[in-house]
Amino acid sequence: MTQLTALLSVSDKTGILDFARELHALGCTLLSTGGTAKLLADNGLPVTEVAAHTGFPEMMDGRVKTLHPKIHGGLLARSDLPEHVAAMQQHGIQRIDILAVNLYPFEATVAKPGCTLEDAIENIDIGGPAMVRSAAKNWKDVTVLTDSAQYAGVLAELKSTGKTSDATRFACSVAAFNRIAQYDAAISNYLSALQPDGSVSAFPAQHNANLVKVQDLRYGENSHQSAALYRDLHPAPGSLVTGKQLQGKELSYNNIADADAAWECVKAFEAPACVIIKHANPCGVAVAATPAEAYSKAFKTDPTSAFGGIIAFNREVDGAAAQLVAKQFVEVLMAPSFTAEALEVFKAKVNVRLLQIALPKGGSTPWEQGRNAQDVKRVGSGLLIQTADNHFLQKADLKVVTTLQPTAQQIDDLMFAWTVAQYVKSNAIVFCGGGMTLGVGAGQMSRVDSTKIAAIKAANAGLALQGSAVASDAFFPFRDGLDVVADAGASCVIQPGGSVRDDEVIAAANERGIAMVFTGVRHFRH
Image (cartoon, rainbow, N blue to C red):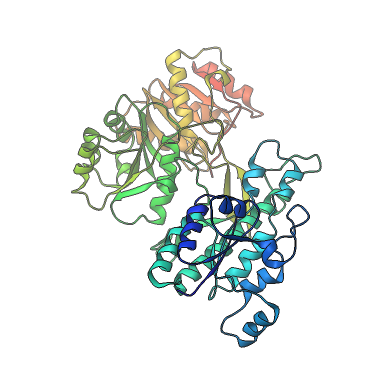
């Protein structure tokens, strides 16, 4: 193998010592900087510090270290251009064949509570990105590594052929430019979010997003549209994109959208739960002692809409649950895990898509709970960005506004109904009782019409609404909405409150003998 020169300069030293040892064993000349050079030298590796290589001392707290013609000339010189080769000879520039660089930990620094502007600025790398860009630009001659996960593949090629392939060098170059883009985006996002008082806005003056493609899709919502699925650089634990497909056809655009709606809804329940989704709306939700029982209850709400739906469980799917689900036509089935018996059941249903997604461990932040911190909606030549609707109601938040006080059982039914309503398209009306949905009215321009649809669905399913609990995602603007749920059989209502006609609606509830509670928060879902 032609003797190669490798420059190793890493902030995160994961794997770098073993990588350097392997390079040395292959006859590579090692150049390095600062802490990396010390690590290699302390472990007996022959390494030349960059200052000795350039003849120019490190200064200004390391700010001027690798910004030197002998470094960038060695990275940028093209071997196929005689004038470049001549210039290297004339000025004593040594070719650098391999560059391993990862950058100062800017992202980790600004993520720390109490990070100061000074700390943030000091963790903006200059020399590292400059070297990475130089090497990536000259990919035909230089292998640039920005992630320790790349070391093993490069070593394997060097051992096999004495060099890296064109394909590997180009892939490393693309990865390097992507990493620089991510780094610069993080800096821009942070600095443009800083406010005069030192606080950091959730909405920076410039929003830079970095997403990684998971897969191309056959088409979008309709066959004349093209589509692809992307994920965040660091997905939240327990989020949809962290899942593993165990069997079934490729997921479609609509499958993914509906699956996300189902998974987000089912994660909201602590008890064993089943959620059935059709066109992003819950058409059946239930909690029970077992997944099988939860599914049976959820399916009863609207068997017609459940046909070809998306089903999510927040518990392991066992054989009993699998046997029940397998009787129906289902597009996607999601759960934290599946028993061997359950997997065996679905072997005969080869088209059913099984997704295994680990539940988040939980924590104080939406990310730790497996939820997005922000929601994004595309509009004409722009984005609407908002904090995600991650408000979760507690019983202590409820305000009883009627003369009639709800019973403990009614409170439980109301809390269940409210949780479901958060995931139903506005205007949302949800009838519940006994830990299951009884009728769901979604997406209507009038809340009265949503109520009528919910009642029709309950009647079609043979479910009685007498004594049911009702949740509305927004306030009743007139008493007619309250009257129609009362006519349907509701005994208690949960709603945000906040209408100028609240008194009129409360009076109507008292008149109809209905207990009503206000939450003080709404859940519009458009």
